[in-house]
Length: 330
Ligand code: SAM
Ligand code: DTB
Ligand code: SF4
Image 1 (cartoon, rainbow, N blue to C red):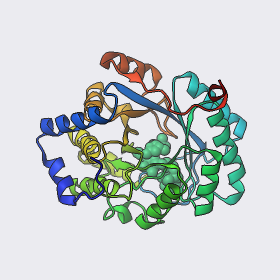
Image 2 (cartoon, rainbow, N blue to C red; image 1 turned 180 degrees about the vertical axis):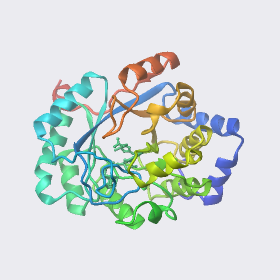
Image 3 (cartoon, helix red, strand yellow; image 1 turned 120 degrees about the horizontal axis):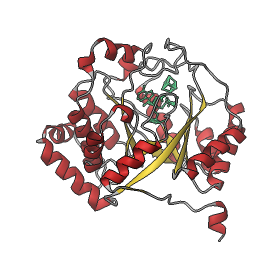
Image 4 (cartoon, protein in one colour; image 1 turned 180 degrees about the horizontal axis):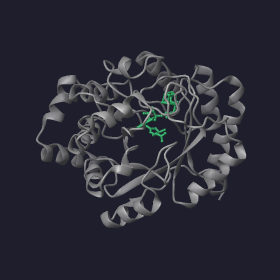
């Protein structure tokens, strides 16, 4: 049953279950709603890197971070389409383009629209994450055929102001509303392992599961601690703050139980995760990952490692649902 009326107490009670019971419940919900041994593959590309005016404490693309990351301009449409073709050859069914912006400027929109149309034409699902959108920009993206828009709430409403000061939780909700109203699928999740409490993880999943409609996909990122970012440095200085892997699996499992039909994406942080922890995440209902050896700017597990993991687990890649371009014309 799809519920958007979860109480915080109910979400907290799920987290409190004995681990085996929680994973069993999550696996049961997973099997009732999704193919149990298929994982969807998405590939990321940073189409505009660094120099972002926002001050998200986890992000090395913020101007407030001192990481030496080189800022770039928006990539050419042609170069983006080349990267998308490569991702398709590697078996990816979705191509996610990310820009380090607070929001896109109207003068950027024609190139963005061309990227969406071009990638879709190749038969891949499209996803973009460009920061805050106006109603009009969301409508333009919908018109171009954008399948998903990623816009994370990142953490609990209570913790939000400690992680980001240049925008509010409500700003996030407003863009999510524009995306939903434009008819684009919502991809919305956040990060664990930022030194938050169990209560914050409860608040984070509760906020997602009580949105007017569950996000179509829910990325659960484990913080990639980058030196020179506020939170990356905190983790380097206090290694004990690192998320316990069992607690990470619990977070995935609670997301699966609370949002049965959403795709739960095991996102950033896989590079330093064991096969065993990832297997537990799949058991607990994660059914999507990012492929390739790079996320936006940091490392990812890589295709060879993932192929070996999938072979070990007997997992196969989920196919894209859309049929566009040449395939649709057949
Ligand atoms: N600028 C846009 C925005 O913030 O919406 C899009 C790009 S932003 C990099 C997308 C998401 O990546 C963030 O919301 C955050 O959840 C995740 N992210 C960024 N840096 C991360 C890190 N170091 N570790 C884990 N996740 C991270
Ligand atoms: C999301 O939740 N995770 C992805 C995607 N949405 C855009 C990004 C992870 C970025 C990790 C840090 C980096 O590589 O820059
Ligand atoms: Fe900018 Fe997005 Fe990074 Fe925040 S997460 S600093 S908005 S690129």
